[in-house]
Image (cartoon, rainbow, N blue to C red):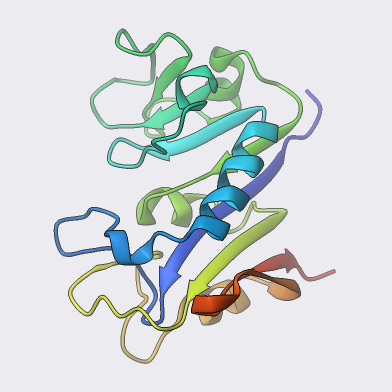
Length: 186
């Protein structure tokens, strides 16, 4: 099997949160430039990986092949509600087996969350695209990685796992929203 390229994608508030206290992405964390960047990345990915609470609500979403991480199956199962989805329990099957079940053995995998799913791949990403909304705070929200909170930022978590910021792109200048590509250090 040819090695898959694994990329992570998330937008976070200034305090490192990706969702509000109800585990939903709030409107204050949605920006047109970031949404366009995210949509374009997912359109070019061969496979999307996310938890059962994460989902991108875009016109092309039903057309994308995906793996949904869940504890509701023993290992692998087809998603009876979404024909292009494979349900995967990491306790019962390897990621490689899940990719094979999804029909993808080469190309780019886009991991889009939530926190536990992001953490599962922390030592496997080729690039992690961290978008930052520096004027948004979600004090009671869900962090993008377990352990993010007072005194520990998403950037520190990525650095701890061997990533360095490679380049930054301004996505929404009016709100200072940018994305930084974090690459594994050589």
